[in-house]
Image (cartoon, rainbow, N blue to C red; front, side):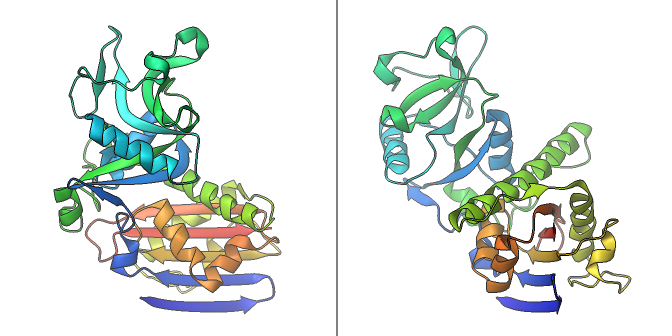
Length: 310
């Protein structure tokens, strides 16, 4: 793992980080069960967006197709402090038929709270989640709700994720408008997830939440692509990183990272580094921009930038 930190002057900080391949892998802290791997994600998304996020890291929303698998997932969420509800990979069609995202129709096994589905009049919907308040039993709510979620990977997905560009590094082809739309939504989710996770860390130390700011977002987007070509706080034209911004700031900062395939992984990597952590928790920073750029044929594949302003 390589690490460098630069201090550019009063109120101006930059930090650079290159992820080690092992610590960067999204599955490093996943739970293994019967050749499958499961991981809880605390950033909250709509059901469809959560499913796309799981695809973007080579897996799918977790399923509970058997009683044993369901009991394992219940124990997983109850054993860890976290969100109240977690999306699972199941939905109901217009005919009322429930189906797992693997294509399997619900069989004789159900684990509905009190043995029945939630009615529409009581906030019920067509998408499945585990509800901590129901001791992990099933709950059905509307997909537009934003919840935490659980991703699942098959054993082969884990073993081949670095070699198979379609699983982790390049999960979706981009020569089709539909897939480009999905990829753009994934980038948007990544940006929002990073901000959400940063604010969780700021709240832990009593620092006010930071907000996305358009000028910083645009600058971070430019910089994320630039560092895929020239990994430095200096831009490819050798100007300072902050020249990517159009507005002036009294306090400004930049964090960059490469190799991390998910928002959780990159934020944890930054939090483990003193210079990056100071930037993210700095109370002088009130605004943030996040950039994410995926370059499948490069060594690090995933490139991240945070730009901060007051």
